[in-house]
Structures are given as structure tokens and as C-alpha cells.
Image 1: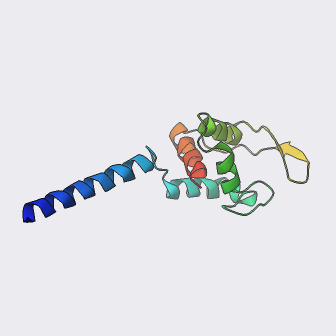
Image 2 (image 1 turned 60 degrees about the horizontal axis):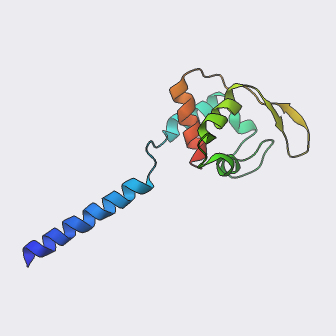
Image 3 (image 1 turned 45 degrees about the horizontal axis):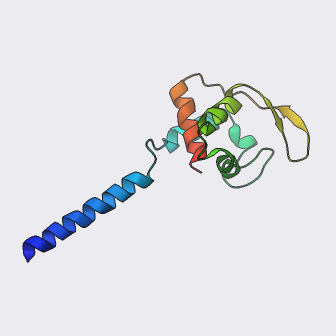
Length: 116
């Protein structure tokens, strides 16, 4: 009986771990590094986690791109190309280009934004 209880506990633990692994992204963003990059580039002047500022919130950006095959790529492009962005008041301006060239750091930041 003790062996069956032990086996059952092992199977339940294994199933829970498997389910957790399936629900977690393949690569979790390094939040500390992403937030340091945000601070360094003053992104918080226009963006916040869940509040609209001059630009959309990180949650709104995440909702727009999360789950799309090219979502991460588009987020990085918006940060690095200075493309025109439309503000809530209807005006347009060039998005400030992030001062980061390391593709891994940019990917991490995009993943962090999309995880919001």
C-alpha cells in the first residue's frame, strides 16, 4: 500500500510538472535586464505597465502582438527603426530608437513586453 501511495504521488508530481512545463514559455524573459534597458533608454517617459501615457501601456502592446508568429519581431522593429507612431490624440511622431544593438538584449526586452 505504501508503494502504491508513493507511485501515485510520483505520477501526480510528474503530471503537474509536465503541465507546468507546457504552460510556460520556452524562454522566460529576464525582467531585471529588461527593466534596466527600459530605464536606460527612458522608455517609461511614454510607456507604463498598465497605464496609458504618451504611448500605449506595455499590456496594450502585449495584447497587440502576443501569440502572433511575428509579434516579437514587430516589437523589436518598433524599438529599433524609429518608425512613425500614431498617438492617442491623433498626431504622429517618430518613435525614439532604443540605444541597444545586442540582439539578445532586444529579444529579451521584446519577450518581457509580450509577457505583460
